[in-house]
Picture (spheres, rainbow over the protein chains, first blue to last red):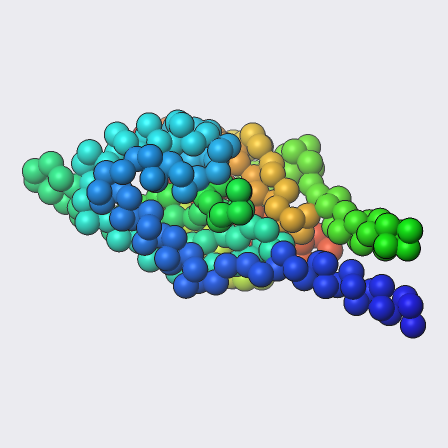
Length: 142
Length: 142
């Protein structure tokens, strides 16, 4: 009997961190991310990444850390507007992490403006009590 | 005292699944993956993915499931040789999942042959007692 009680308590402890993110939660975060890009707020954008986050951009070398990612996006924002990201699928990975698959569209600013469409993967992890991007990578279908 | 013992037992249970993969373990799996591509063994390659795996190729639409991934790679193998993949970083995500960052190089078969260099992210998860790719995505620096 005591063994069963112990098992139940342990299960409770194990289940606790499984209060993971839903697709709607992540979509909200992606909306914040897109809003930060659209108002060219690199600092707010950078705050959405973990300190040691990895970014693997299409068309640029991989980089590590909030500061490198902030500098990259600060540059990229110069020629981006109307960014909209759509969360397609979220899978919890052990409760403390989740992987998201999504797509984004944007327009370039410089003439002739053209539409950019990408698909991406983000790994979300908790840092300082907040869900942050610990990894981002994207590419295009073409 | 009993509370401390309980905590210790629970910690033990929590730590158990953390026997996760090392960088060397993943490199071994990547070597198997590359070997399967190099001998054009699509079935062996497909067996390295989870049943519902996601693949987000650079230059093609995202797809879901072992069968779709097998068909994709069966086609891609026709023009690939000398594939070599290098695991750069592995991070455990809750013990039952891990994310890998790496690079691959390959040569095309068709003349004029050219070198392909990509960087990638793979999420590894256990299925049927084996570590398998539950997600792959890649892109190029250029």
